[in-house]
Length: 548
DNA sequence: AAGCCAATAT
DNA sequence: GATATTGGCT
Image (cartoon, rainbow, N blue to C red):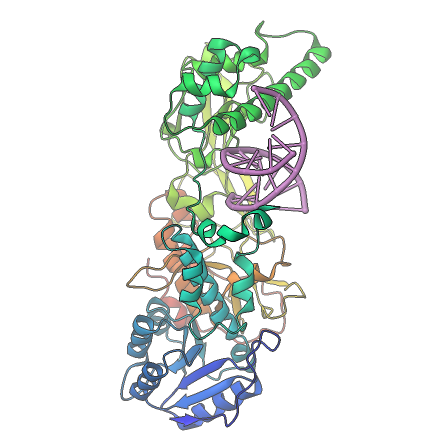
């Protein structure tokens, strides 16, 4: 081992990331020296080492002596991946892999084994400069995980638990973000009990499911809205875990909702003077809630965009029926059923909630299905699904969807994941969008960006793979938030990006034919509008990715 | 960034 | 009990 630094850079919040403790492992002394130089230029505290085994020893010996490890893949004594595995198991430091070739399988292997980045030699200064972000991100995630445990262990413990060796103000980013907020007045009143209070299990929020709400409405109707209070409702509802406060809160919302409805109603009546139903909408709503006109199968409260199902998703209530927007991409009829549709009045009251198949999460939430309702001869409404079509923002709508036949794709939904090329260190200047990924194009990319930063979000780790990913295919509207930026994972080359896309594809979108048709797995690049990027991309590398 | 939601304060 | 405000969340 050669310790590159005779002195230490100060490790303070102010100077961060100066003094970042980096261990570099490479059997090639030349590379080792070059990288050491570069890292030192970043004011990092570098330790170099040409044997993987030795590196492991160092790490074991000085357990908390490093913030991040950069390791070559090919080494005589121990495979870089092996090292990665050990590090992951024993100290859970962020590890960056590097190698001269960008062979797909290798990159994939690296990422799969939990590498947080994969650098291709020659490594650029910019890439090394950015490595601190992996450290911060990891810290932040750990913090989240610990908080996620909620209960039992109090946060005081948790805090010291993760701070081993870093509790010096260095990781201000991770620290300051999550513990900030408290209710006004809370702190002063309860300071003495702080430890107790912090450890208190967060009260779980009551979710007013359709069933629960129906019960609520029934009760209210039974007594009459004007005479009833939360206490009485609570008693009559007879739901053991519900509190008076819960009911009061819900009642408040319900009343607000009704009054809003009333206003709309008044407005409408003053316009047309005619009404389809002689029930006021208020009564109609209550009636509807109590009846079984609309049943929700597989209802999932989380997906319901509005608290009251009847407040709904109907967008257009004109003569011919409306369009129901489902918040999620759904494919089958069993998401909702309309029974006895003839009794549904035109003025409101057709409603449904989307049913999220968890799998579709990331993608489909941006691709709402639309259903148009029309009346047939018997006055029965039928629904017809209109498939939204994905459209590239930069007018690539002519692209074909290979492997998909007879797909009608009328409506257009914007869908343009973006890749940012600007280093995320420059958070003050919002990065420019350099690339867009059309999910449907089989063309090989024309060019390879020097560095790709793609919005990827770590999903919770499991024991075998410390990190797995899915992509969030959307553009962020705001780049102002520092910690949001930090969420982004750095991907140094297209291969790893594509690998992540593959993971994403197989993890997220196993079945839906429409989504598969998007060719997510064959993520390609186009619109290389940036002339700076001139490196030709080798199709060979790409082939390995088209395996599905 | 705005709006919704349930919880909490008044 | 009613209403206003808050903080979390999307």
